[in-house]
Amino acid sequence: MSARGSRWSTRFGALVVLGSVLLLATSNTVAPAAPAPPAAIPIKGGGSWGAYQELLPWQNDLSSSKQPIDLSYTAHGSQIGRSEFLSGANDFVLSGVPFNPAELAKIPGGASSIIDAPVQVSSIGFLLEAPVPDGFATLQQLCDPDDPATPDPSQCFVKHAYTGPIRIPDTNLAAMAMHYPGNTFPPLNSWNATDVLKTMGVDNFTTPPLAGPAPVNRSDPDEVNLFLQQYVASRAPSVWSGVKAMNPTIPWDANTERLARQPLASRDGVDQQSQQLALGGGDPTTGTINQFTAGVFAPVPPSALGGIEKTFPDVKLQFIEMKNAHGDWVDPTPDSITASVNAGGNTPLYALSHDVPNGYPLVWVDHLYAPAHGLSIEKTEALAATIRYLATSGQNAAKPVGEGRLSAPLTAQALAAANQLVKSNCAGNDRHVEESSDPGAYAPDLPAVKAIGTMSHCVSGGPAAPAATTGGGGGTTGTFGGTSSGGAGSGTTATAAAATDASSSASTDGAVKVKRRADGSLIASELPLPSPATTGGIDRFATLLLGVGLFFLLRKPVGKLFSRAAR
Image (cartoon, rainbow, N blue to C red; front, side, top):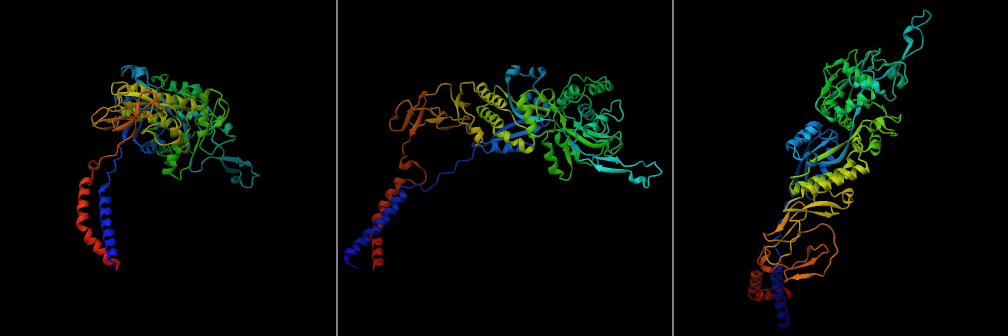
């Protein structure tokens, strides 16, 4: 190789060394640690069983938020739920029964201390396990078995299976629910009662003449008991009077969430109650089939059907159909339940006494009750986000389990309650309310939630936005939930709403460029690059000096190496 070629090889090798060192000096070789995921905000509630099959989808969605919400809920009856809420044990309660005056007297401010948001539709379905072993069957008489001319008397009766709908008039259904026989034969609560046979269009059932379904009611104090008693009293007054006469010492007319008298079997909670429908169809108090028992039924949320079928797939269950005020025979389906809510709104049992085509009669709305005062910023935002979710995207969990959904006016009422919860809890020198169409970090990333529109948020910081500061130590406070970044100095309050800039950008002495919005707040628009010696990892200035030294030390050996390689 010529001397000129050798010199170019030496120079090329030196350039390789210098370039490698400079690349190392200007790169941050240690990647910053990934930020830890935010801790979930716990929200604890209890009360009604109406939503117990919708709870899991709710929990999954809320836990997927950028700022996760850990929703825990114990279904143990509306009355116990309200009691726990008043004691401070829970953040909210679900109940279809509002707080009574005695309960409100236990908290300062009474009703003004509680936020009320409709979030879930509940109802009573009479779920039946048919008589065993034959189910429903009728006997058809073809001849007279006592006639001597009959060649084979055993052939005079033919059994036919009954496969039609189970439709029970109100008086008989109320008698079955209260296990009240009345003064007729066959008894009012039997399958062979005159009006029952007439309604179902048959002459008889093969069940014993005195036998009817055994009811399994709720032993815990719950809204289902209250609305069941209201149904019996309003639609079957003769049954109500008869039951009262049988038990004159019981205060029947003060309908509460406890049954005034347990007519037969009862269980604590829907799960235990509904399991009695899978134990063979006998009397649940004795476990036997006898002359008075033919099948078992329970007043439960319609969603209980799916829960039983998952556990006991071989059990044959169906809902008893009721007659509404319009004259339709209906069972509890998502459509018939929703039709009642759309017509009656917040009025319980609306289709029982009002003309609602295809409306199921025993429907009401469960409300989420939450504190109007005293919540932290985080709990305020989390509860408001929970209400907004339940009233919008959360309604999609209802139909798959057999329940109905809120009407549009009830959804609007719930969203207004969420805003009120924010405003009433966001009072103080450390926080203020901002309006935004951004659902915030606590809300699940779902279309219906994002489409709500303007909503209130509780933001940390005083009521007035503080002025921007320059120099070291400054931080930015906000946005939702009281989180903050930066040092101990004052900063600028962030807002989630989009705003038009009212002035051009201004520089704060070369440190941070900001813009002032129309509302007077300041936002950062451009940040300075970090100095080489302050970014962590390898000190770039020291590395640069080392690189220069290595350049002068290694340029000749590397050049000779490249010269030999080029020969």
